[in-house]
Image 1 (cartoon, helix red, strand yellow):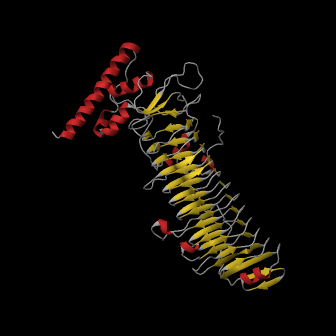
Image 2 (cartoon, helix red, strand yellow):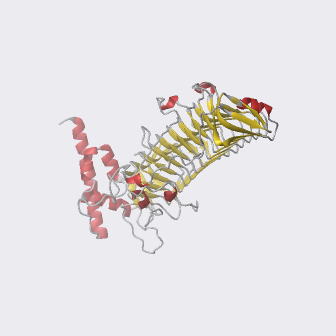
Image 3 (cartoon, helix red, strand yellow):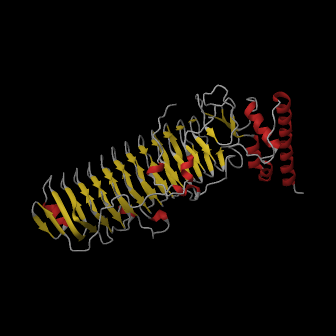
Length: 498
């Protein structure tokens, strides 16, 4: 036998010795019946006791992400284009824009093979009932909005250049208060680039990135926000871009009711404070929502579904401070929520369902309020550093843990028995994988019971001192197979009541 095997055996013997001691303490002091071998483990064991382990895409198949719900009325006709302004017609969209005065409307009909720069303030560029397309021919920026308060509506924009360094984009916004509505953007490097312009509104827009470009990092972002304040992005759909919505030094931006699929990061914050992310869906991406180096974020009522790339996080919170992550549904991701050096955040009322790991906390993340969350059927409920004890919820309520032992004697919905999703057994199995065969044994169950019953047993891991008896969420919606739409499964509004 090797020295390593001997050390491993010694560790197992220590583990079993601890189990034997726990058995004696529980039997003599409490006189409780021990669970039989094969009974479900606690929520922090090899699997949540209430069901199967691990992220399972088929489980979440009842929630499908709708396609083509944004900009559905936009068409790209192939007839020669005619642009009309103030009763005068032009064969060139640029000529019509140049002829327009402030406050006038340019109506586009048909196909325009050109690149357009709108420099006039208070201008409207709209498609006729027959539709309009501006095709940049694979060069540069297709449509640039340099004037202030310029509106683009109903137009199909396509065919930008491929140079990410020069911000080749379908729509490039350089003027304040631009409005881009009911627009379709295809075959572009960046879909929309907001460049130092404030108070833009992007609504009912569909952006299809260049799916054929690999690696994904060679694509541009769907919507790229640079040094913008007060911008709104809502009711839009983005697919096959690098990042769906990218924030860089952006402030007070509302991203609401958008769907993002098949990207590296669905939403990506960098150096962007005091923003709101509400009621969005990020499905089948590498990471659903990547929150990085920002503070004062409100991330509420979003869905992260089947984000299982090499990183595979529903929500990644890296160097995030003083933010609220509440009421989100994190379903069938590799990690539901990954915390890395995250400080002073409120993680409340989230459904964390069928993920590989529910919450993975690393790099000394701390000072979080973790309360009102429902941990259901994750392969592993929690993962943390194994050298410290993390006490969650310092409030009058904790979290729901499927499979946890609970006792609610006063009927207030909070168990008087604390819960240890990570404790002696979980740390022992992590260090000695062969011990997983005994994870559901009576001895190991006795250790878990002792840790829940005796506050004096404070080994490294996680403790929830006030676990909830019932979940706050109806997770069964994700097991339906009726093709339920995003709207049917959207998280209900939550209040950060803690």
